[in-house]
Image 1 (cartoon, one colour):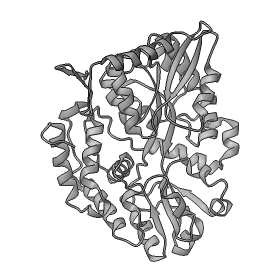
Image 2 (cartoon, one colour):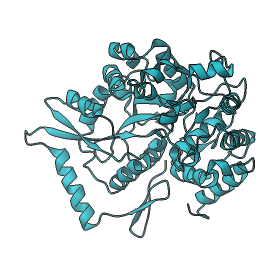
Image 3 (cartoon, one colour):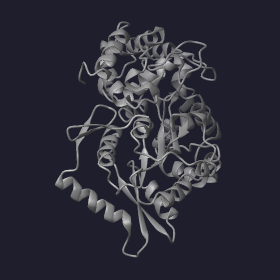
Image 4 (cartoon, rainbow, N blue to C red):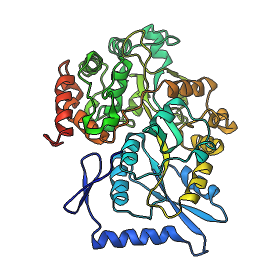
Length: 433
């Protein structure tokens, strides 16, 4: 099990970043946070839950899960997942007891678990949690132990304009490949929306392409810095060729090099709208645009190789209990409530982020808010999803990929080889990001 490395007064955690031991200023902030978590003015314990930004759905759950013994208060983390990681890791590395519960992005679950920042889920608690989808369990597990409780599971699907697919002669009832949708869009005046900015979302796309071609970026991520980096493979070359084809085709959107989940929304609603890969919130996003909504279809994530099942990108949130919390018994009671099927379903209705369990999908209001075929696609996609490698050094690996694969129009069949070399050099401390 990896633990934070200590040297000359510096605490380091997986990912290569470092933080100074508590200075007087930081100590004061940590003490204030600890006092907040200890008790409220009513004399009840206050559990502090650090959450990812949303429209208020987690705050509503926190209120409903508060009891006569404790009150759950929320603190909102930065919008960027990387910054969420940095803020939490700095405080946890400093032993801050002002964090009780955390909404943790799957990309950093292994890192936090390897550094002993989270308490593994006790078997007694695990038995009370909803039976989660395979993809959710995989993303929440480290060293064969569930280390966070799956809360919601995001997955990408292929969204398309029905009128465009019909014009292009594509049968969307059957699996389609990246090659097919890029060619169809380019030949008929459409675009393919993707996430290709220099950020984690771009690596999510690359990982899905590689896994869809039968490969892995890392084959034994639990080995940490000694993991086998395998992006230089036929699967890696297939992924690079797909990116190269889109980047140099008429189907690429003008802002490809800075595209993200949000920038692809508007073009999809225009006459050039054809395809986009994006998360589950898309349906809710177009709820007020009836023209686009009525012409919008959905299908399984595109195949990297014809006939080989795709591995849709997996995202979401797991609820972790901080190892520095003074209220661990109460924390687990709160986790059981937060991740209940009803709260998973209600959160999906309010946020567009889908449940991590089949039981959560049974929430009546969720079934009313979404077409049955779309909810079925989401569940099928989560079970088929390809999570990012569960490495405690994922932030370094991801950063190295971003450095060598961006911008998209610079990617060639030789990119996987140069990328692999750079990743290994970064992990060995021979290169800096």
